[in-house]
Length: 258
Image 1 (tube, helix red, strand yellow):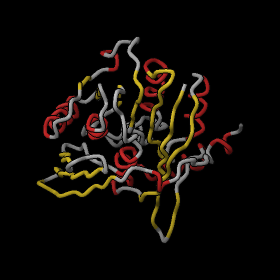
Image 2 (cartoon, one colour):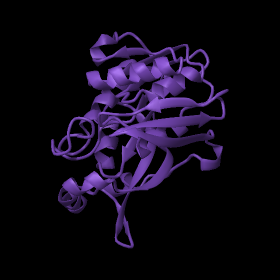
Image 3 (tube, one colour):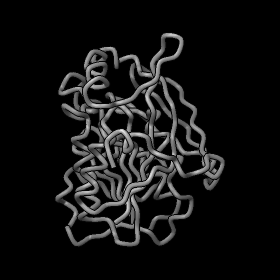
């Protein structure tokens, strides 16, 4: 399979089959917002507080929409938890064990507050190596820092030179801690070379399939890396759309299995 074929994925999942989940937000002060999350399986909405550059993004919402509705008896790990929303949703959908991991102490603190706020049972870790290599999970989730910014954006969004540094770490985590009968869900932007992710996964005997797709406008702060994105489209095959002078990225949800 060549690179051009690999970067034109077929999305297999029907959008009307996805769980019904809705987000509304209200600004509290400064960069702090509170998100109300309604899910068809929740008896009442939950509330997620954002802040300090850690928020609920289009990536977050897309991944949350793809979390299976019935997780009873399953173990879940959320890699790069941010506000904690994915782990909290998984816990409230019945997971027997939910672990949330984030290298940022600020994110762990915020996520822990959100979990407590919503009565979700979540364990928090700051390092992957705090999880034993022998521990397996039925579901792994990841909304990675994945902008090809090479340090220009900052801690919460910077995915390194090609945007795939955290994606690759997550795939290695899948190799180590995903059960043979389980699966992982990863949000992958078209601003990161898909063919490199596919090659990296294939070298580790991981199977990838594309289960959801969303087109979303560039966020305002992308202006600081726009020249880099233009260069990467010319030289590395990343994709984005332009319509009426506005730019859009494609967000994929990738299902990963051993």
